[in-house]
Length: 175
Image 1 (spheres, rainbow, N blue to C red):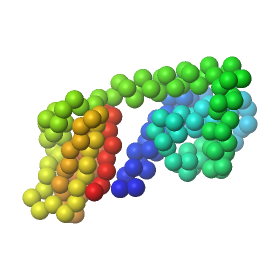
Image 2 (image 1 turned 90 degrees about the vertical axis):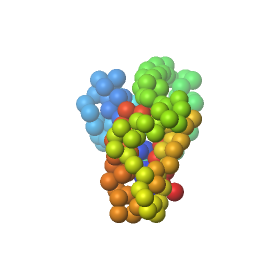
Image 3 (image 1 turned 120 degrees about the vertical axis):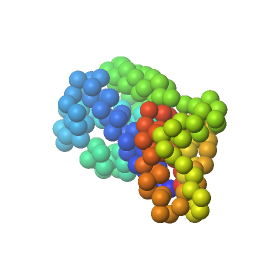
Image 4 (image 1 turned 45 degrees about the vertical axis):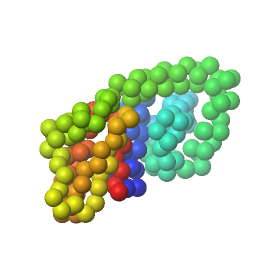
């Protein structure tokens, strides 16, 4: 369960980094450069803060992808309020990235009721196993459903679930 949650956090963080570099006009992957130039430092700090605020991304994931020490992520969080209040360039870039990321996350599909979610999963080949041994819980919006799978078919069904929910706002949990 923890591994799957980590994978989703890493995916979200990579998408946030790509969105950020696109907005501020940097090369993809440049937030991990060792440069201390302001053009890299400000977006790097902002990406860390937004990832923690919006997705509750683990600091270890952020530090790994930014190639920085985890303690720096704590520093970014601590300094956010002060930077936002007193540093107009930081505030402007933060607002642009935060709004774009929120719009992107809000634009992803969520399901209004259980029947729609189940139909969507079935249309994408996700099925319950006759002799289930574990369960994949899928939550999207206010709706959640369980997919009962056998150990033998677990990986296959997990991949189908992830593929089916690609353009959706969702969480997966192994029970």
